[in-house]
Image (cartoon, rainbow, N blue to C red; front, top):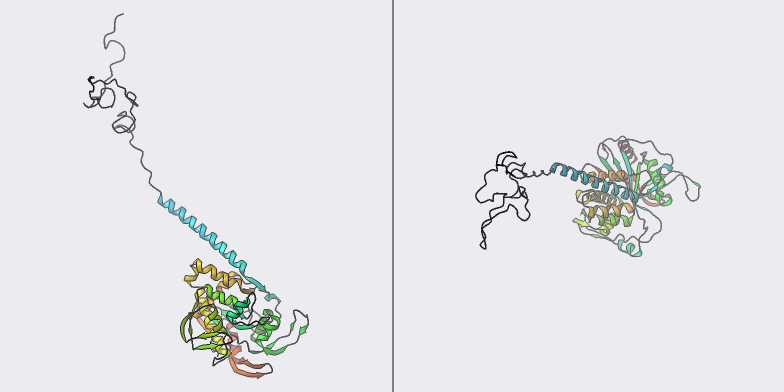
Length: 407
């Protein structure tokens, strides 16, 4: 058979681009150097290589394929979307904070002891402007061991009496704290005995007697009857709760006005600025003997300390520190008896109002007194100056700036 001459029929010869001198004629593999006496020979094949198709790596592959001079080049690296990441992080943080905050609220709210029903108080006066809190420190020894009673010098008397009573008015014209001496000689209105069911006639007695006989309900009614001011909320804390609250905030700084020593309360302090722990604080606010003004001086010390305690409890160093905040809330709320309508927000408002008074945004005073040593059938008592009391209560009820001075 005749062999066709080149160029006569058949496909035209393929023209490949010229190659650098160091490459083989059939691909991209560098020329093999002669070895062991063999001539330089390349059959166009090599391990891992296919004729005309490299691996796309440096120095290999089709010069017109991907990665080559005519290809699209390497895939670009996608830039990190920092804005999206930051947004996701912030949303996650906000959700976590909300969850912790809501959980803390319900935990704290469940600890409040809502045991006082003010709706059962008889013959209540009309409300006024602002909010009125009655804050009571009782000598309740509930839950205290014999060792605790001995350490805190509380004695072992049965029942409950009031060691302090403070009327706190919160309004737009400054907050006012008015201490009510427990020996105040007042009219105790007629009431129905909770145990006997009998109607007890009206009488004259010390203010503390109303609490001792019928508890918070009659105490609130007696104060409302003698002042004409409606009590919106009631809060009470006992000896042990008070001491634990002070220890929970890490102690309270106070300027002791004079050297103080009293065997009954266990107080033994030197004059000057110092930090009191729970035991020392309780002795400080309870001392009444050995003070020049007797019970009136004691009520001033109680106001002074309660304001300092509220200032410490509501400070950023406590509120923003969970290692202080939770022990403080636990110690305070576990022992805080309040009325049934008092919310956790009301408790917060009460503390911040006391804090503002200690910061100078308000007024601290005793109930105006005309005779601190009134002789009565029940012993020495404190007689109010009713002219000043009427003016003071009118200013509080109308939420006006207080102009009356106390003792």
